Image 1 (tube, one colour):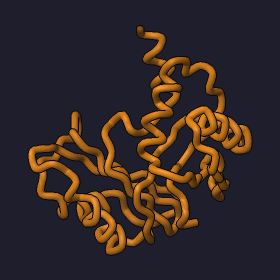
Image 2: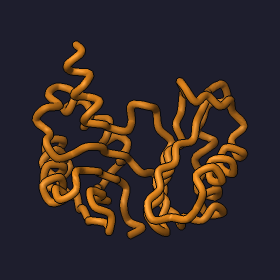
Image 3: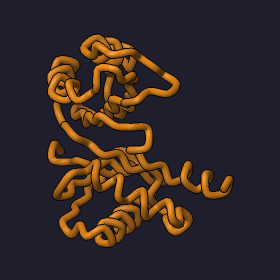
Length: 177
């Protein structure tokens, strides 16, 4: 499963519809080569696309924000920059590869979502955060170190708060404005 660079969530039973909806979104962005696979967890898909997944998500946000109500099956889209074994030592090595991209004056937080793993969230956060010599800000961080664990694989990304698309949040935002 190591060849994924997107994680997409949907409602249980809508995985196929979600994959099709995401493929249509990708085509609208000029991305033709997209592949999705179900995981053993209902409502959880992993995908692979050519190119930068972070750039894809940022461009997709522009389309989704225009009319978030047209998206019926996608719930969240998370870009993944590194994939490694879901072992603390392997995750630490992957984080070391991208942590130097955090500007010195920036704050950060670590977010861990795990499925099918016995690792403790607090242990992961403590070990990973100890590698980053920046100020921690749990409320308004400049950078989010996102760790998505799916069984024995971990997807790791260095993101801004807006780099994870939540269709529900975008729908709520459209009602406010």
